[in-house]
Length: 114
Length: 108
Image 1 (cartoon, each protein chain N blue to C red):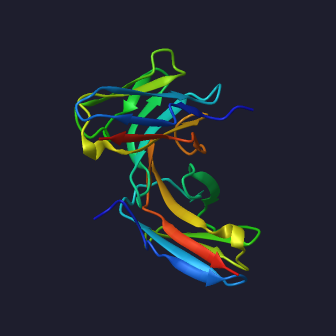
Image 2 (cartoon, chains in turn red, cyan):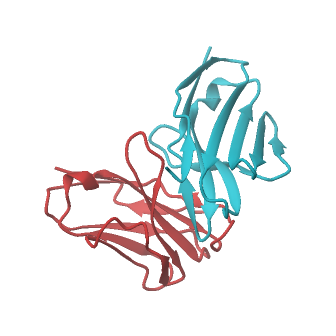
Image 3 (cartoon, each protein chain N blue to C red):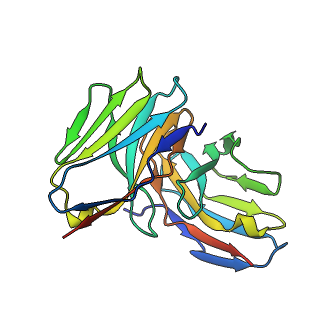
């Protein structure tokens, strides 16, 4: 079946601009996660949704980052006033529920801030 | 101290070699543990879960030592296709924490 999809696959923007990154999880998966991965590093946790609500947003680096999941399926990560340090691969993952269930990752969105 | 620490490598080994990766974690309340594999410019994929009793899946063996907060992955008879980055993952419910990964290159 269909896996986790993310769009766009690549996004190049200028410093100070606003970007939206989209994640479409596996159908039926109630848990959705956003991670950020920089070169040579492991994925860094950003935020976790259980259904429509953000169960844990402690990984968001500052208030320029925000994420929503209004209908409990598709999620959008929003970054305001982008900075060059925001350049990374943004990964989305979903699982049947939180806890110990396997997370399935999407292919990621490579964000480059010039 | 990082929540999950791994030796970054790289490990360069010949085909057929046995190689072991180690990982330590800081939160003693962590509930579950995993090894994920990540190929270059691809997303991470689950390799195996790690259980207290140790578990084996073909050429791969994972072990957990809760007292020492230590996880290991052993790969026997390594193949060229094992070349990848191996990520140690600790579930700190409700979310997971990833190590920086250990890079493995298996050479002919």
